[in-house]
Length: 149
Ligand code: HEC
Ligand code: HEC
Ligand code: HEC
Ligand code: HEC
Ligand code: HEC
Ligand code: HEC
Image 1: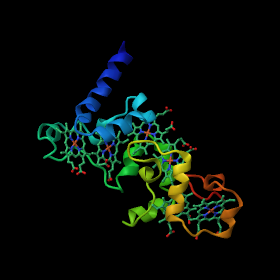
Image 2: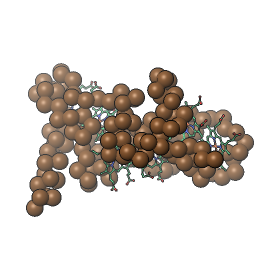
Image 3: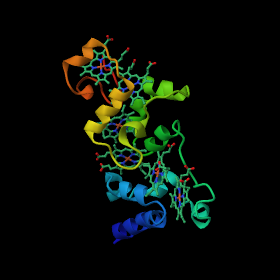
């Protein structure tokens, strides 16, 4: 009973958004997040003013690229901690293009392992010779910790 109520409460914001945002809404539904009750409000707030003004007022929360890791990290603290020890985070914090959680995982729909690999290659077109020994980047590089010596 409590679980059912929680699920209903969790899906309510989703329904409030999907009429105007059909694509994010169907993307979120395909993510394991949705089954666990994580929807629009978890990352964008309830955005009441935004809804009532038909989009002419800003949503409560839209994370900038630097804000995305701490946002995801509220529920994924271990991945955040590991990620924040890498060059990816150092470069992102310096305001330059780098990989953050959503670059690899997607904003709303979960990217497949294959799509993630293509994403690595997009930024790392040239790689040391040592990288050619196996087809998967993640055979040798931990996705959140990168190189482990
Ligand atoms: C009545 C229509 C409507 C509803 C309901 C609505 N939005 Fe929007 N939303 C808009 C419009 C219009 C825009 C601006 C579209 C654009 O810039 O392409 C927008 C833009 C956004 C943006 C991007 C803003 C930016 O600056 O990049 C986010 C995030 C967003 N909405 C989240 C939500 C969430 C979350 C909900 C539900 C809680 C919601 N919206 C409900 C109409 C709506
Ligand atoms: C797990 C966090 C998360 C959830 C859940 C989430 N979003 Fe987002 N959303 C993001 C991030 C991250 C961005 C990209 C912000 C940026 O580029 O800086 C984004 C961007 C957007 C945008 C801007 C245009 C776009 O598609 O990138 C809209 C509109 C939007 N979200 C609507 C929604 C709606 C509607 C829901 C629920 C159906 C939702 N979001 C659920 C994290 C989330
Ligand atoms: C409000 C809490 C919350 C937030 C915020 C959140 N997540 Fe999650 N995430 C979850 C839960 C709950 C699960 C499901 C865990 C499980 O089933 O074991 C999950 C699962 C995942 C998974 C694993 C999916 C799979 O294959 O099963 C990934 C990847 C993920 N989240 C990435 C992100 C990213 C990226 C962000 C930020 C844009 C984010 N999460 C923000 C709660 C959250
Ligand atoms: C450089 C790309 C990349 C970045 C950046 C990244 N991840 Fe991942 N993440 C991956 C890959 C690859 C996997 C493993 C996927 C698989 O095995 O299918 C993964 C797995 C996960 C999982 C599943 C559980 C686990 O640990 O294996 C979660 C949750 C997750 N990431 C959350 C996050 C969060 C939160 C951030 C930001 C703090 C983040 N990721 C940043 C690539 C990345
Ligand atoms: C959006 C671009 C982008 C994506 C996507 C990306 N990276 Fe990176 N990566 C960077 C940048 C920028 C650096 C830092 C380069 C520097 O040190 O100046 C970096 C550094 C690294 C390093 C070196 C770390 C060190 O300590 O010197 C490794 C290894 C790495 N990335 C692996 C990966 C893997 C594996 C993936 C995919 C799972 C990936 N990257 C995805 C931009 C990206
Ligand atoms: C067989 C193991 C292995 C695989 C697979 C692998 N790497 Fe590497 N990678 C290494 C090693 C070892 C180093 C350190 C090499 C060095 O310092 O000369 C490295 C270094 C790197 C660096 C840092 C380069 C620098 O200049 O510091 C990047 C970026 C990188 N790899 C990206 C990738 C990407 C992207 C993939 C997948 C397309 C990949 N690697 C696959 C083992 C691997």
